Image 1 (cartoon, helix red, strand yellow):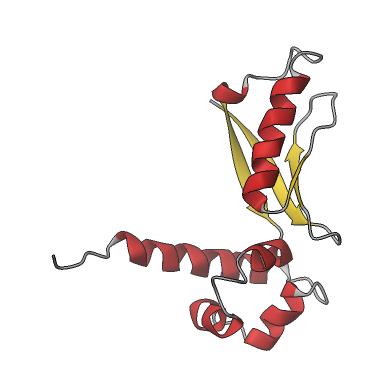
Image 2 (image 1 turned 45 degrees about the vertical axis):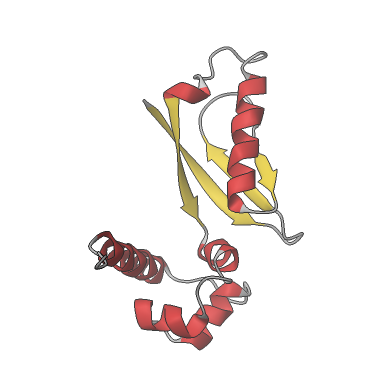
Length: 133
């Protein structure tokens, strides 16, 4: 299965842009109010573009690997995670996370990796959760 890296960005308009990174000679992007909508729009656009660009792989034979810009991720999930909660998960002060969220500052690559690693560790904790009936 072919993998296409997709950079997910939130634009100034508030819309999400799914920007696939590929070597095909066609410009394709997906837009939506949420990251999921943008990715679904990209799938539709990709399918329509196959009519004009037959070298594009079938969507069913591909996997879009989404990579968020930190600010876009924080904006997408701001309703689920408070900055105080993210501080506990990542170890990065909420004031600094706020700067990333608002686009005032960009995290260094090592900080981006620290946030990503902390969120992956947090997610794996839920894989082990079981409740008593």
